[in-house]
Image 1 (cartoon, rainbow, N blue to C red):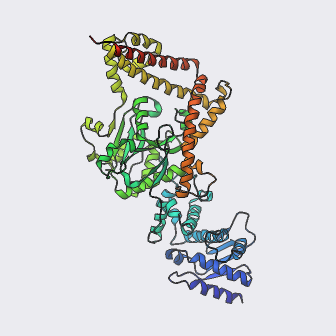
Image 2: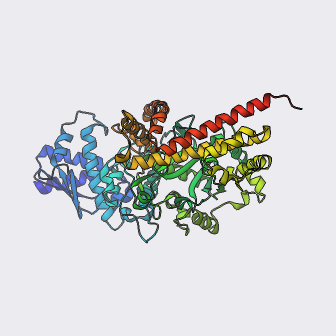
Image 3: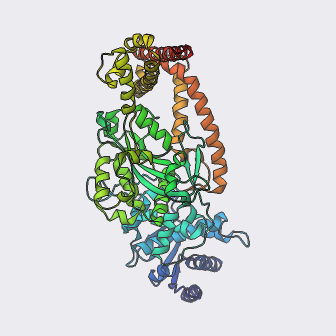
Length: 603
């Protein structure tokens, strides 16, 4: 009788046309109704397999239904034998008539079956997906920067359909093939993996109605739209954006970023899009410490999260050229249209899923930017681009022919005018200082020396300046205030790194905690959707919720920042507080004097 049932099962499972399914031998002492239900389940699962997968399965395929699997384990695969939890079969049998793949019992049973079939296929001669270098790139087992091989840990932890996928490449393949075959939205949520599986199994790409835009959360401090929906069709080019180095140890070799040249709405994609600076977006890997200077020791030991930030270009230009007095060089990358789209999709995936660790020497901005290019564009992955310094990465990109040097004008003035180079404000500041120095016989030889003077030492010059020198000194006092604010943020961060050193102030600790916690959401966008169904890139039903939450938190963060500013100043060392107050007083004095001089009748 058992032999007859086995033959019947094999006949039934082989009846699906063009599938070439293996014969199945069901084991486990099933009753007739259980055997029929198990046969139906196996038919439903095998019918979903791509033909390449189905043909590679062992023949016969042994399936046993067991009651003794550990809690939480729905199946196991050993060789050509699969063991499945009999409770899944009972739930399958109890499903209501007409229940589709979305029904929990149907989904659970099919997912367990496909998961184990994926293991059997992956271990077979035609499998090997979990060892495929391209799959490992996309999955998150990234190439190492300073040694051969790959990172042992997968940091794509956010927005995962099942955290078990991060356990190993084999489990990643099994979990994702479940969703690839069962989830109609898989191609929208994980487009690069869907395309890779389609190519691997030689299947035509399925038509899926995905939202055309890619969601990025912009920094709340400066962004007009905190949730930016980026249409890849509006991205004209991608540039390697290098912030030049300075004397500080952690900034000596510069900072690596990618600049997205986004066309203004209604403008055809073309070179004129380079003039639409207000629409350009910068992708920057940073150690998240709430936008203030970080501890070099913690950066060496990997104590900071490394995440992909999306920032308005104007904010980045101001941050580097006006505050840090560093130039920005924008070098176009030589990418095809399909490669631009792949790079944007990978960047969006990292923005929502990646939660790495930042190391100054081994996993810094240059390494992360190189990995983004490597994982997104297979052509670039084949080039020797790996570098642990931003300047070194630019040299290797140029040497490999991965940059479009012909697009950059040779004339430095044209580079500035067309946005290929953003000059540090130091040159402008020096010119303004020369105006004041000649008129007032100031002692410091350059603007850096002037700005490093105590604010009280700069005040006498402000009190006696004429119209032109007063205008120049007003600009320099504004620069001095930005410098003092940066130093204050650095001092505050060092206090926050050592909470026991913070002065006791009623309510200030809790206010700081809430402010930093809220800021953390803008560095880790997946936090807004925690507890919600869905994975990968947020889709239409999630974006409405997301947009409302991001906008509300952006407004709240601004309000908290304004309330906290006065409190935070009280936490600073007395010398830092005095320098801030004196610089603000200088700026007010320079403004009053300039207005008074402007009202005087000219001779």
